[in-house]
Length: 370
Image (cartoon, rainbow, N blue to C red):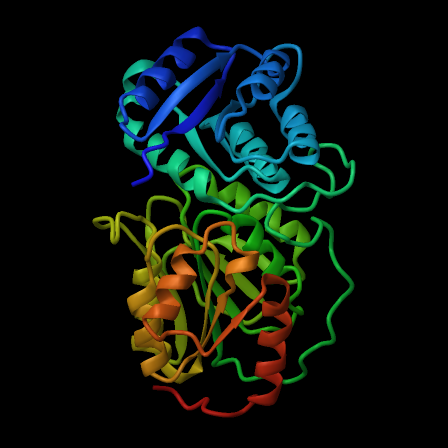
Protein backbone atom coordinates (compact mmCIF):
# COMPACT_ATOMS: atom_id res chain seq x y z
CA UNK A 1 0.00 0.00 0.00
CA UNK A 2 1.36 3.40 -0.99
CA UNK A 3 1.31 5.58 2.13
CA UNK A 4 3.17 8.55 0.65
CA UNK A 5 1.46 11.78 1.55
CA UNK A 6 0.79 14.54 -0.99
CA UNK A 7 3.17 17.37 -0.13
CA UNK A 8 1.89 20.95 -0.41
CA UNK A 9 3.45 24.41 -0.30
CA UNK A 10 1.07 27.27 0.55
CA UNK A 11 1.76 30.69 -1.03
CA UNK A 12 -0.23 33.60 0.41
CA UNK A 13 0.70 37.04 1.73
CA UNK A 14 -1.75 36.73 4.65
CA UNK A 15 -0.25 35.08 7.73
CA UNK A 16 -3.79 34.17 8.84
CA UNK A 17 -4.59 32.42 5.57
CA UNK A 18 -1.23 30.62 5.53
CA UNK A 19 -1.88 29.33 9.01
CA UNK A 20 -5.44 28.25 8.27
CA UNK A 21 -4.52 26.46 5.05
CA UNK A 22 -1.64 24.73 6.80
CA UNK A 23 -4.03 23.58 9.54
CA UNK A 24 -6.63 22.36 7.02
CA UNK A 25 -4.05 20.43 4.99
CA UNK A 26 -2.31 18.86 7.99
CA UNK A 27 -5.61 17.55 9.37
CA UNK A 28 -5.87 15.20 6.38
CA UNK A 29 -4.15 11.81 6.71
CA UNK A 30 -3.02 11.75 3.07
CA UNK A 31 -1.40 15.19 2.74
CA UNK A 32 1.02 17.47 4.55
CA UNK A 33 1.96 21.14 4.25
CA UNK A 34 5.75 21.22 4.01
CA UNK A 35 6.13 24.97 3.61
CA UNK A 36 4.30 28.30 3.62
CA UNK A 37 5.61 31.34 1.76
CA UNK A 38 4.50 34.97 2.02
CA UNK A 39 5.42 35.86 -1.56
CA UNK A 40 6.40 34.20 -4.84
CA UNK A 41 10.13 34.84 -4.45
CA UNK A 42 10.19 32.90 -1.17
CA UNK A 43 7.94 30.30 -2.78
CA UNK A 44 10.39 29.86 -5.64
CA UNK A 45 13.14 28.86 -3.22
CA UNK A 46 10.81 26.53 -1.31
CA UNK A 47 9.78 24.80 -4.52
CA UNK A 48 13.41 24.32 -5.49
CA UNK A 49 14.43 22.86 -2.14
CA UNK A 50 11.24 21.02 -1.06
CA UNK A 51 9.90 19.82 -4.44
CA UNK A 52 6.21 19.74 -3.42
CA UNK A 53 3.53 17.78 -5.25
CA UNK A 54 1.07 20.71 -5.26
CA UNK A 55 1.12 24.41 -4.43
CA UNK A 56 -1.76 26.67 -3.44
CA UNK A 57 -1.30 30.17 -4.80
CA UNK A 58 -2.84 33.53 -3.99
CA UNK A 59 -3.14 36.11 -6.76
CA UNK A 60 -2.46 39.49 -5.14
CA UNK A 61 0.90 39.36 -3.38
CA UNK A 62 3.94 41.60 -2.83
CA UNK A 63 7.13 41.54 -4.91
CA UNK A 64 5.58 39.53 -7.76
CA UNK A 65 2.01 39.18 -8.96
CA UNK A 66 0.61 35.66 -8.63
CA UNK A 67 -0.19 35.46 -12.35
CA UNK A 68 3.35 36.45 -13.31
CA UNK A 69 4.68 33.80 -10.97
CA UNK A 70 2.26 31.19 -12.33
CA UNK A 71 3.22 31.93 -15.94
CA UNK A 72 6.93 31.56 -15.14
CA UNK A 73 6.32 28.41 -13.12
CA UNK A 74 4.30 26.71 -15.87
CA UNK A 75 7.01 27.48 -18.45
CA UNK A 76 10.03 26.52 -16.37
CA UNK A 77 8.79 23.95 -13.84
CA UNK A 78 5.21 22.87 -14.58
CA UNK A 79 3.42 21.53 -11.53
CA UNK A 80 -0.13 21.30 -10.15
CA UNK A 81 -1.39 24.64 -8.82
CA UNK A 82 -4.65 25.36 -6.98
CA UNK A 83 -5.49 29.08 -6.93
CA UNK A 84 -6.94 30.64 -3.78
CA UNK A 85 -8.75 33.73 -5.06
CA UNK A 86 -11.05 36.43 -3.76
CA UNK A 87 -14.70 36.16 -4.77
CA UNK A 88 -15.04 39.48 -6.57
CA UNK A 89 -15.63 40.41 -10.19
CA UNK A 90 -11.95 41.23 -10.61
CA UNK A 91 -11.06 38.07 -8.71
CA UNK A 92 -13.15 36.03 -11.13
CA UNK A 93 -11.44 37.55 -14.17
CA UNK A 94 -7.97 36.96 -12.70
CA UNK A 95 -8.85 33.40 -11.71
CA UNK A 96 -9.97 32.62 -15.26
CA UNK A 97 -6.63 33.94 -16.54
CA UNK A 98 -4.89 31.67 -14.03
CA UNK A 99 -6.79 28.65 -15.40
CA UNK A 100 -5.76 29.73 -18.89
CA UNK A 101 -2.15 29.79 -17.75
CA UNK A 102 -2.39 26.23 -16.46
CA UNK A 103 -3.71 26.27 -12.88
CA UNK A 104 -5.66 23.07 -12.22
CA UNK A 105 -8.48 24.57 -10.15
CA UNK A 106 -9.37 27.32 -7.70
CA UNK A 107 -10.99 27.97 -4.33
CA UNK A 108 -12.71 31.24 -3.48
CA UNK A 109 -11.57 33.01 -0.33
CA UNK A 110 -14.48 34.63 1.54
CA UNK A 111 -14.34 38.43 1.61
CA UNK A 112 -15.38 38.54 5.27
CA UNK A 113 -15.05 36.03 8.07
CA UNK A 114 -11.93 34.54 6.47
CA UNK A 115 -11.13 32.14 9.30
CA UNK A 116 -14.60 30.57 9.57
CA UNK A 117 -15.09 30.71 5.80
CA UNK A 118 -11.88 28.85 4.99
CA UNK A 119 -12.57 26.22 7.65
CA UNK A 120 -15.99 25.61 6.09
CA UNK A 121 -14.28 25.23 2.72
CA UNK A 122 -11.84 22.68 4.12
CA UNK A 123 -13.36 19.70 2.30
CA UNK A 124 -13.44 21.59 -0.99
CA UNK A 125 -9.83 22.75 -0.61
CA UNK A 126 -8.45 19.32 0.23
CA UNK A 127 -10.51 17.60 -2.48
CA UNK A 128 -9.05 19.98 -5.05
CA UNK A 129 -5.53 19.39 -3.78
CA UNK A 130 -6.09 15.64 -4.18
CA UNK A 131 -7.38 16.15 -7.70
CA UNK A 132 -4.49 18.46 -8.59
CA UNK A 133 -1.96 15.90 -7.36
CA UNK A 134 -3.31 13.40 -9.93
CA UNK A 135 -3.82 15.89 -12.76
CA UNK A 136 -1.93 15.88 -16.04
CA UNK A 137 0.20 19.03 -16.25
CA UNK A 138 2.03 20.25 -19.35
CA UNK A 139 4.68 22.89 -19.84
CA UNK A 140 3.22 26.24 -20.85
CA UNK A 141 4.46 27.14 -24.35
CA UNK A 142 5.70 30.54 -25.44
CA UNK A 143 6.52 33.62 -23.44
CA UNK A 144 3.28 35.58 -23.57
CA UNK A 145 2.46 37.77 -20.59
CA UNK A 146 -0.47 36.91 -18.33
CA UNK A 147 -3.80 37.85 -19.87
CA UNK A 148 -2.49 37.70 -23.43
CA UNK A 149 -2.95 34.75 -25.75
CA UNK A 150 -1.46 31.92 -23.75
CA UNK A 151 -1.94 28.24 -24.43
CA UNK A 152 -3.72 26.16 -21.82
CA UNK A 153 -2.02 23.37 -19.93
CA UNK A 154 -4.45 20.78 -21.30
CA UNK A 155 -3.41 21.11 -24.92
CA UNK A 156 -6.00 23.72 -25.87
CA UNK A 157 -5.31 26.21 -28.63
CA UNK A 158 -4.15 29.73 -27.84
CA UNK A 159 -6.74 32.16 -26.50
CA UNK A 160 -7.15 33.96 -29.81
CA UNK A 161 -9.72 33.43 -32.53
CA UNK A 162 -8.54 30.71 -34.94
CA UNK A 163 -9.24 30.97 -38.63
CA UNK A 164 -12.94 30.56 -39.29
CA UNK A 165 -14.10 27.01 -39.99
CA UNK A 166 -16.12 26.59 -43.13
CA UNK A 167 -19.78 27.38 -42.54
CA UNK A 168 -21.94 24.33 -42.07
CA UNK A 169 -24.58 25.51 -44.47
CA UNK A 170 -28.25 24.91 -43.68
CA UNK A 171 -28.51 22.64 -40.66
CA UNK A 172 -31.59 21.72 -38.73
CA UNK A 173 -32.39 24.14 -35.92
CA UNK A 174 -33.61 21.10 -33.99
CA UNK A 175 -30.08 19.95 -33.13
CA UNK A 176 -28.55 20.95 -29.78
CA UNK A 177 -25.00 20.28 -28.52
CA UNK A 178 -24.73 19.51 -24.79
CA UNK A 179 -21.36 19.85 -23.03
CA UNK A 180 -20.39 18.72 -19.53
CA UNK A 181 -17.05 19.55 -17.88
CA UNK A 182 -15.33 20.04 -14.54
CA UNK A 183 -11.63 20.26 -13.59
CA UNK A 184 -9.70 21.56 -16.60
CA UNK A 185 -12.96 22.19 -18.40
CA UNK A 186 -12.86 25.97 -18.67
CA UNK A 187 -10.07 25.78 -21.23
CA UNK A 188 -11.32 22.55 -22.82
CA UNK A 189 -14.74 24.08 -23.41
CA UNK A 190 -13.10 27.16 -24.89
CA UNK A 191 -11.18 24.96 -27.33
CA UNK A 192 -14.43 23.45 -28.55
CA UNK A 193 -16.44 26.68 -28.76
CA UNK A 194 -13.87 28.80 -30.59
CA UNK A 195 -13.67 26.20 -33.33
CA UNK A 196 -17.42 26.09 -34.03
CA UNK A 197 -18.83 28.20 -36.87
CA UNK A 198 -21.34 30.98 -36.33
CA UNK A 199 -24.18 28.90 -37.81
CA UNK A 200 -23.74 25.89 -35.53
CA UNK A 201 -26.64 24.52 -33.49
CA UNK A 202 -27.30 25.83 -30.00
CA UNK A 203 -24.83 24.73 -27.31
CA UNK A 204 -25.80 24.18 -23.66
CA UNK A 205 -22.94 23.88 -21.17
CA UNK A 206 -22.70 22.76 -17.57
CA UNK A 207 -19.24 23.51 -16.18
CA UNK A 208 -18.71 22.94 -12.46
CA UNK A 209 -18.15 26.50 -11.20
CA UNK A 210 -19.30 28.35 -8.08
CA UNK A 211 -21.52 31.45 -8.09
CA UNK A 212 -19.76 34.61 -9.19
CA UNK A 213 -17.55 33.09 -11.87
CA UNK A 214 -19.81 31.88 -14.68
CA UNK A 215 -20.82 35.39 -15.80
CA UNK A 216 -17.17 36.41 -16.25
CA UNK A 217 -16.40 33.07 -17.89
CA UNK A 218 -19.24 33.48 -20.40
CA UNK A 219 -18.17 37.06 -21.17
CA UNK A 220 -14.61 35.89 -21.82
CA UNK A 221 -15.77 33.14 -24.18
CA UNK A 222 -18.06 35.57 -25.95
CA UNK A 223 -15.03 37.64 -27.00
CA UNK A 224 -13.31 34.56 -28.47
CA UNK A 225 -16.04 32.49 -30.12
CA UNK A 226 -18.02 33.23 -33.29
CA UNK A 227 -21.22 32.17 -31.59
CA UNK A 228 -22.81 34.30 -28.87
CA UNK A 229 -21.92 32.99 -25.40
CA UNK A 230 -23.81 34.04 -22.26
CA UNK A 231 -24.85 32.83 -18.84
CA UNK A 232 -28.25 31.19 -19.23
CA UNK A 233 -31.40 32.86 -17.91
CA UNK A 234 -34.53 30.98 -16.99
CA UNK A 235 -37.11 30.69 -19.76
CA UNK A 236 -35.02 32.08 -22.61
CA UNK A 237 -35.36 30.49 -26.01
CA UNK A 238 -32.49 28.23 -27.06
CA UNK A 239 -31.29 29.44 -30.47
CA UNK A 240 -28.76 28.29 -33.07
CA UNK A 241 -25.48 30.20 -33.02
CA UNK A 242 -25.74 30.71 -29.24
CA UNK A 243 -24.12 28.99 -26.26
CA UNK A 244 -25.71 28.97 -22.81
CA UNK A 245 -23.67 28.37 -19.64
CA UNK A 246 -25.34 27.14 -16.45
CA UNK A 247 -25.00 29.84 -13.75
CA UNK A 248 -22.88 28.84 -10.78
CA UNK A 249 -25.06 27.60 -7.92
CA UNK A 250 -28.04 26.68 -10.16
CA UNK A 251 -28.99 23.68 -12.24
CA UNK A 252 -29.76 24.10 -15.95
CA UNK A 253 -31.98 21.92 -18.12
CA UNK A 254 -33.68 22.13 -21.50
CA UNK A 255 -37.45 22.03 -21.81
CA UNK A 256 -40.09 22.45 -24.51
CA UNK A 257 -42.36 25.46 -24.72
CA UNK A 258 -44.71 25.05 -27.65
CA UNK A 259 -42.60 24.83 -30.79
CA UNK A 260 -39.43 26.05 -29.06
CA UNK A 261 -36.71 24.74 -26.80
CA UNK A 262 -36.10 26.89 -23.71
CA UNK A 263 -33.46 26.92 -20.97
CA UNK A 264 -34.61 26.28 -17.43
CA UNK A 265 -32.42 27.62 -14.63
CA UNK A 266 -33.53 26.41 -11.25
CA UNK A 267 -32.43 25.89 -7.66
CA UNK A 268 -32.41 22.52 -5.96
CA UNK A 269 -30.26 20.09 -4.05
CA UNK A 270 -26.79 19.27 -5.40
CA UNK A 271 -26.72 16.23 -7.69
CA UNK A 272 -23.57 14.11 -7.47
CA UNK A 273 -22.36 16.82 -5.05
CA UNK A 274 -22.60 19.46 -7.78
CA UNK A 275 -24.80 22.45 -8.53
CA UNK A 276 -24.89 22.93 -11.46
CA UNK A 277 -24.82 19.24 -12.30
CA UNK A 278 -24.09 17.70 -15.68
CA UNK A 279 -26.51 14.90 -14.78
CA UNK A 280 -29.42 17.36 -14.65
CA UNK A 281 -28.61 18.88 -18.06
CA UNK A 282 -27.95 15.55 -19.80
CA UNK A 283 -31.06 13.91 -18.35
CA UNK A 284 -33.18 16.69 -19.79
CA UNK A 285 -31.38 16.33 -23.14
CA UNK A 286 -32.32 12.65 -23.27
CA UNK A 287 -35.92 13.31 -22.26
CA UNK A 288 -36.63 16.41 -24.35
CA UNK A 289 -34.22 16.44 -27.31
CA UNK A 290 -33.57 12.72 -27.82
CA UNK A 291 -31.98 11.82 -31.16
CA UNK A 292 -31.51 15.49 -32.06
CA UNK A 293 -28.95 15.87 -29.25
CA UNK A 294 -25.16 15.67 -29.43
CA UNK A 295 -23.41 15.00 -26.11
CA UNK A 296 -19.85 16.01 -25.26
CA UNK A 297 -18.09 14.99 -22.04
CA UNK A 298 -14.88 16.88 -21.32
CA UNK A 299 -12.19 16.68 -18.64
CA UNK A 300 -13.26 16.51 -15.00
CA UNK A 301 -13.03 14.63 -11.72
CA UNK A 302 -15.73 12.16 -10.68
CA UNK A 303 -18.66 10.69 -12.57
CA UNK A 304 -21.23 13.49 -12.82
CA UNK A 305 -23.31 13.06 -15.96
CA UNK A 306 -22.11 9.58 -16.92
CA UNK A 307 -25.41 7.79 -16.31
CA UNK A 308 -27.45 10.52 -18.00
CA UNK A 309 -25.10 10.51 -20.99
CA UNK A 310 -25.82 6.79 -21.43
CA UNK A 311 -29.53 7.65 -21.23
CA UNK A 312 -28.93 10.23 -23.98
CA UNK A 313 -27.32 7.59 -26.18
CA UNK A 314 -30.18 5.18 -25.51
CA UNK A 315 -32.55 7.95 -26.64
CA UNK A 316 -30.65 8.27 -29.93
CA UNK A 317 -28.10 11.02 -29.32
CA UNK A 318 -24.59 10.98 -30.76
CA UNK A 319 -21.93 11.34 -28.04
CA UNK A 320 -18.21 12.02 -27.89
CA UNK A 321 -15.86 11.90 -24.90
CA UNK A 322 -12.47 13.55 -24.55
CA UNK A 323 -9.60 11.06 -24.51
CA UNK A 324 -7.35 10.46 -21.53
CA UNK A 325 -4.17 11.89 -23.04
CA UNK A 326 -5.69 15.36 -23.57
CA UNK A 327 -7.65 15.52 -20.28
CA UNK A 328 -6.38 17.34 -17.22
CA UNK A 329 -8.40 14.77 -15.23
CA UNK A 330 -9.91 11.77 -17.03
CA UNK A 331 -12.58 10.96 -14.41
CA UNK A 332 -15.81 12.16 -16.03
CA UNK A 333 -15.03 10.97 -19.57
CA UNK A 334 -13.79 7.62 -18.23
CA UNK A 335 -17.00 7.07 -16.26
CA UNK A 336 -19.12 7.96 -19.28
CA UNK A 337 -17.11 5.58 -21.47
CA UNK A 338 -17.42 2.82 -18.85
CA UNK A 339 -21.20 3.33 -18.83
CA UNK A 340 -21.29 2.78 -22.60
CA UNK A 341 -22.27 6.40 -23.27
CA UNK A 342 -19.66 7.27 -25.93
CA UNK A 343 -20.01 6.81 -29.66
CA UNK A 344 -16.46 8.13 -30.10
CA UNK A 345 -13.47 9.03 -27.90
CA UNK A 346 -11.28 11.81 -29.31
CA UNK A 347 -8.41 14.16 -28.43
CA UNK A 348 -9.64 17.60 -27.40
CA UNK A 349 -8.49 19.35 -30.57
CA UNK A 350 -10.45 16.91 -32.74
CA UNK A 351 -13.80 17.28 -30.99
CA UNK A 352 -15.05 20.48 -32.66
CA UNK A 353 -14.03 19.37 -36.17
CA UNK A 354 -15.75 16.02 -35.60
CA UNK A 355 -18.93 17.73 -34.37
CA UNK A 356 -18.97 19.83 -37.54
CA UNK A 357 -18.30 16.79 -39.73
CA UNK A 358 -21.04 14.76 -38.04
CA UNK A 359 -23.55 17.59 -38.30
CA UNK A 360 -22.83 18.08 -42.00
CA UNK A 361 -23.18 14.39 -42.76
CA UNK A 362 -26.38 14.11 -40.72
CA UNK A 363 -28.04 17.41 -41.65
CA UNK A 364 -31.74 16.91 -42.07
CA UNK A 365 -31.64 13.43 -40.54
CA UNK A 366 -33.71 12.49 -37.46
CA UNK A 367 -34.96 16.02 -36.91
CA UNK A 368 -38.59 15.28 -36.19
CA UNK A 369 -39.36 16.21 -32.61
CA UNK A 370 -39.38 13.55 -29.96
